[in-house]
Image 1 (cartoon, protein in one colour):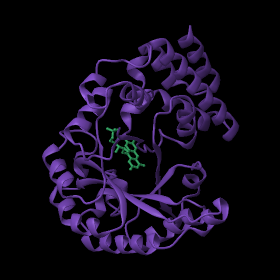
Image 2: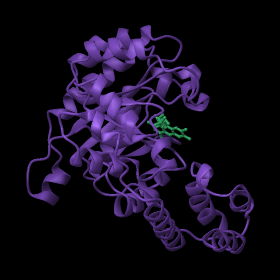
Image 3: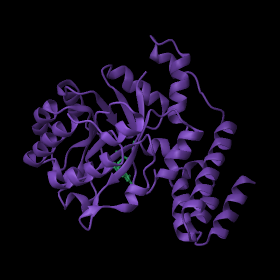
Length: 332
Ligand SMILES: Cc1cc2nc3c(=O)[nH]c(=O)nc-3n(C[C@H](O)[C@H](O)[C@H](O)COP(=O)(O)O)c2cc1C
């Protein structure tokens, strides 16, 4: 069975969201936190506060010096697995040479991989002290094929192959495409053949049968990472796991015939998850606008599952009382 990883989405998969998802829907092997970045020459406090235990934090950096500052602060907090972002297509990051903007800079990536090699050969003393056992630090990479051309990823591949990475997650688009346009499966397949590290596929997965299809087409694949598909159907990972466990392992085709969760169960769990997010956001934040940003974003990708009228009310609510009224209406 393949691993199913929850992709990080800044503004959507917040710490509160990830915790509630793990408790209520589950089925996910690891949650990746949205990237931690440098702001005013220091790690951004807001990003650090948002991290839960037992998740994988991610960093975005344009140089080995930024990388070191961010990795050090996470190691000091006891994290032993860190993901490095080489895929963010937002112009704010790309123009600062971060995310997909670093893919064309072979030298910067080489220096970061050298730092990863150094850090991987040490152990995390904070984690060691807490867990009373050795805790080597592991690094993974999440990347695109390039900012402008897939040749960027292939120019980096020999360097990545030499680095002690635990896995590479590949979103087979270019930075300039952002999150739309055709996925380049041809380049993905070439990367899949040539990567020495376990490879995770990311991009546009929304159904159990798509996960199974990836498993069938790419037997060496270590897993799939899913973002928008899980936000739109939070039961997706658990449904895959249940169906896969029930099916004859030899026959992936069989998995597609079952449907794991009834619509009633789905709706009940969805409201349960919403309540957990709502309660936690009210405990953690003060003022309607901060709480609203957490709960309103919960519904964003669920739009197809709820009535248009209610969705509009949720989005338009400027006060918590207006929002709560919309939720009462939705529950009927
Ligand atoms: C609004 C938004 C925020 C995102 N934030 C991050 C991030 O912080 N780190 C990251 O690696 N990817 C980020 N991504 C990319 C997703 O992790 C994922 O790669 C992308 O959505 C494609 O996968 P999907 O089709 O399964 O959603 C973001 C995407 C969106 C749309």
